[in-house]
Amino acid sequence: MQRCQPIGIFDSGVGGLTVAREVFRQMPGEEILYFADTAHVPYGPRPASELIRFALEITDFLVAEGAKLILVACNTSSSLALDIIRERHKVPVVGVVDPGAEEAVRLSRNGRIGVLATEATIRKGAHSRRVGELNSAMQVFGQACPRFVPLVESGRYSGDEARAASKQYLAPLIEAGVDTIVLGCTHYPFLEPVIREVIGEKITLIDPACQTVAQGKALMERGIIPFRDPRGPKPRHRFYVSGDPVSFARVGGALLGVPLDNDTRQVCLDGILEREWNQKVVFA
Image 1 (cartoon, helix red, strand yellow):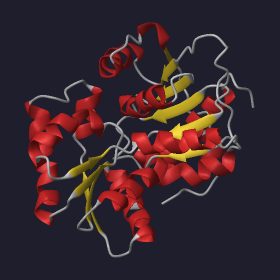
Image 2 (image 1 turned 90 degrees about the vertical axis):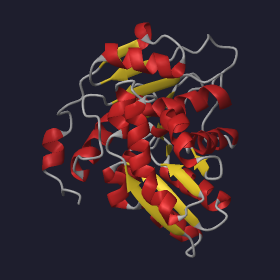
Image 3 (image 1 turned 180 degrees about the vertical axis):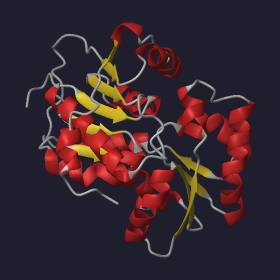
Image 4 (image 1 turned 30 degrees about the horizontal axis):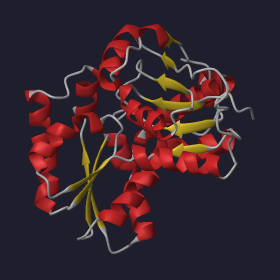
C-alpha cells in the first residue's frame, strides 16, 4: 500500500460529503476519492439484495482506483453490506452505523435514544442491535424519514417543506421522551438547523461523521494504513457519480462551500455484477 493512495468514500448521493468534510478537517493532508450513486438515490425504498449489489460494485470501483481505506458514508449500506464488503476486499472498511450508536450510548442520560434514518436502515435495526450490545437497558426509537434525502439532493434542505417534514418525523421521538437523536443518514446533518428548530436545545444530536473518520484515522495512526506523504503534491480530490454530474456538482459544491464542477465525473457501474449477483443467494 502506497502513501499517495486516496481514501475512498461512498454514499447514495451528496450526504456522504458530511464524511468528506470531516476527512478534510481531521486529516487535511489526505486525498479523497468520492463516489455518489445518484442514479439510484434514494436507497431507502429499495430491496436489500439490490443495495448490497450496488455497494459491491462501488467498492470494487474504489479499490480498482487505488483506495487505501473505504469509509462507507451511507447508513443503509453500512447496515446491510459492511461485512460482505470486508469479506470481498482486503482494504480496511469503516461504516457509519456503529460509531453513531456508540456515541449515542455514551451521551444519552435517560437511556432513550432516537434514530432518524431511511426505511431500509430502520428495517435492518442495526442501530438498535449495536446499542443493545453496549447497554441492554437502553431503548431505541427508530423513525424512517423518506422525504429527507430527496430534499437534500435537490438543495431544498432549509425551507418550509424541510421544516414540515422535520416536524412530522420528530413528533414521535419527542413524544417518546428521547434525549439523544442519531442522524442515521449522512444526508441528515445538512438538515440540522431545521431539525434543531423543532427539537430545541435540550436534545443531543449526533452526526456520526466525526466518529467514523476518527476510527479511520486511528487505523492510520496505528500504522495499519499509511498517511499520505506531506512532501508530495497538493491533494487532488476526485468525485464520481453514477447520475447527473452537473446536479451533483451544483448541490455538493454548495454544501461543501467549494466548486466541484471540474472535479466531478460520471461513471456507469450498472450491471457490472448483475450476472454474477443473480446466480447468488438473494439477501432478505
